[in-house]
Length: 554
Image (cartoon, rainbow, N blue to C red; front, side, top):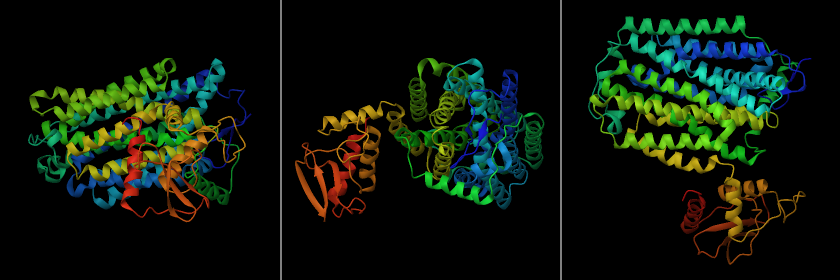
């Protein structure tokens, strides 16, 4: 019996037979290990090159620009290509074809001409979303088989399998950086001035730029990495078992499916999915800082490009160990606990980078920062994707596409400014963003908002299901309330008798609370679909102050 069936909108297949495991336990573990090994080899090569882009290909900012292009195209592929590729090629061959795009990019670094780098970067962007979505779908499916064999919760198996995968996958950082360290060992000298928090990429010394890596060294490094990419593709082709999709669809149906995925981005079937956007973007913002700014502003500047690989080996070791440890720990503690650990580690490392005046004699601190950052990154990466997979794999097939979309946006934003702002500015931005998302991590956010509204005089009946004008579910109430505040239209579902009201336009009123005239509590619009334009600066300030006052961490 074939267990998979395509649905629309679709970025991963939906199970139609959930009782008969298709793979034996041995085959389940075999595919888990082989998939992990193939990704280790491929991303040993790819991430080895990405880690060096801000230090190796600095001429005309080609390296970082190529990463911006990659993640810009990833936004498109996250929306339009994942379901199409998986239906056309199946899970196995979607992964293989995706690997080809990465291989082209690695090979382009042999001669990093802008046109070659940018075209190959675009190919990576187009290939990445289908590859990673197919991988996540494949892991989710064999985890489901595992849960059936073990007669345990699907969530436990998913957390275990993603933990094992990322524990093995995380070692790619180790091997890639070991290779780059030995190959580039005699390639450059350090700048040693204005490093760390004082580093400004727009005025950086040209000491550690591409000319310090001779052509022979570059050919050796890129040749090794390209060969590893080809080996990974061959391993996938020869050893990975296929999980077939039962229904093949016409091109018209596939294009319609992509359009439905695009339209689904404005629909939020679950309020908690809306609040996952900030944390999803954070998983890429913190990664991009490490690969684009920490490697250049701290490592390359202070001790030379040859040490980028060595320091990042430490990052990879801690990331690999932490992926497995926290993948196991989460079933005992829950995700909120491990997310809190990750946030605290990030806070500590950001503060350390602020306070440290870098000296080459203190290079051990580079290993400390990279290692602990790897622990936090392992938690973010494994548990955020596991959260999407567990909560939405059956109810919202576009969830993984949304996950990749917001990750891509996070990368584009961070890489876009990373070459133009100081490390100090970047650290401040990291602190602000981390502070914003921390309170949004916990599920009790909804209870907090509920209490916030009730304490201010609102009421609702969450048991009512008839969508009347008086009683609403808590999810609908929160969605509508935030929609009202953000878009300035619609009708809040929380009701309160106004203390004072100001008429802005016909049929539109803004209410103020008992605390004064500065906070907008709700807005009603009898026509419901008209857009209100606040015409005075005082009302605009009031809206801003409401948002600041309502944030849980203020």
